[in-house]
Structures are given as structure tokens and as C-alpha cells.
Image (tube, rainbow, N blue to C red; front, side, top):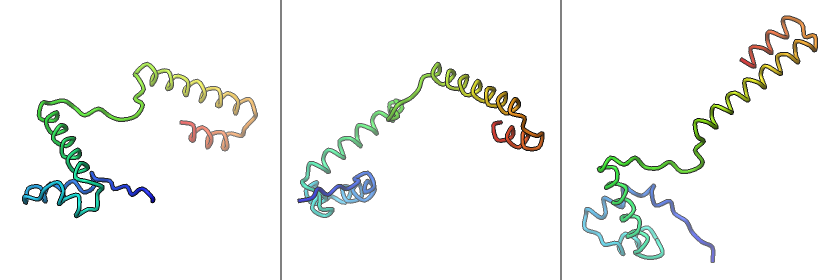
Length: 108
């Protein structure tokens, strides 16, 4: 049997409307074809927790890798050095002024 996955967050508005209308977790789960009522229960629990944190002024954490300021600065420095190296190489390669200026505009 293949696993079906539903992005429940996309159904958030409809689920909340059904909950406000008095539907049970089981009725909502059956309506959308979820495995059981705990899918809806856990979703609503996560949503309530998120809302409580937002009311308290806690900003949600971003997911994924977040580079530090030091890493960002070193990356900018490395790219500037790379651009300078490429400019010098093109200058030494004997590029004509028109082709050189076109390439320089690309690097800047």
C-alpha cells in the first residue's frame, strides 16, 4: 500500500472553520481521509502552541542553515578577491577595451 501525504497546513483554514462549526476531530479526519483523528488533534495542538508563542512575542525560528555574520563577511571578502583576480587575469590576457568593459560590467 502506498503512503498518502497531505499538506495539512494548506487545509488549515477549512479545518478551523469545521472545528468552529462544532465538528469533532474524528469527523474532520474522515472528511479529508486522514489516517485517524490524531492527525487533526496534533495539528491543532501545534497551531495553538504557535499562536501562544506569537502572542507572547516570541518570533518563530527559521528552519535550515543560517550563516553567522562572520561567515557572511568572509564570503563577501572571498568573492571580492575572486573578482579582483579575474579582472587582473583579463587585463593580462590582452582583452580589447570594448570586450574588457563588457566583461567588467558583468563582474560588477
